Length: 467
Image 1 (cartoon, rainbow, N blue to C red):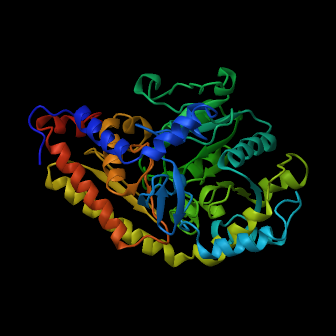
Image 2: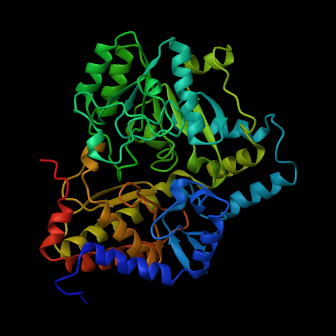
């Protein structure tokens, strides 16, 4: 049923937020209490959401239960971590066995060898070291590239997030007024980051080989390396255009620049060998985290013999008290050997493809344009007629529609990341057809709600036209 001709998008959001709040009294109590001892009442700023953060009680398989006891099909996946599903039996067995034998030694355990060998086979890079997060291993990548070459500059893609260390927290924009001209994007440091750190980067748009070549030529002999997500994952999903990654590989080799793939979000999620295997382009360095640990904190950095010899020879000390932690290595070994086998990716991608097709059909039935993508366990639907090819194009898309969609999905029993415009869904080995159907039904309800905006809905879906 429609809400009449006077309804606005703010009205729709407000009503869905009221439903959200009415369903979650216990969660509201926890949040109020948490704010007295935790800034913002959350453990990480990214756990914040409007109208209040979601407090989770437990998870099993494809589902999580909030603090009020409501079950959701979990397509948040801990920001892309839980592709093995919650409490996966293989991971649980591995961790239970390991915890009884000791959880920390700051010395290697045998499981780390199996994990390194499996990653070498999947990603085509022979040598691996471990860390505890994506931030740590991308930081190692920056350090390695600079230590090996003796150069200071690093090329980064406009808008990408590579962790919250000083070298990487630059050019991560929330609005278009910070971007600067396309031929020379601004180097804007994040909060607490000095401009001097930002000035050690050179920023180029994704999918733009001429821009990359101009930068490499202008700073010939000064650039240590380039870090890039082989597909952008904080802008829905923006895949590389045909030939782009091959071109990046050729240009970096031509100019003597090391190439690092940040596969924290894509690795072991979009393909069993990550985007490296999926697109057939092998960099000098690969950074992994998230899905590798089967739900435990983890990180891994792989490289060529030449790159990783810098660690062996003492040119760079890759260190960390918890690197290769026994619990993490046990979980990662079970994840790689028993759970994330090649066939699981085809199964997940088939379900995701049905979700995308069903969602786009539901939107189109109400005259709403959309685009999307599905790779392995990852997929996204974006409420805009034109697929973005880089971050500044994506910034023009309505955030309000995405927030409404998040609320509709959550109130309809599907848990998505709260930053709906930028984050894609994450499936797991435990998701089934019924979960995908639930997602599509919620998209249909969202489309019907937005229809009540009348002619204004067309303007919202066209916000930020790229032409």
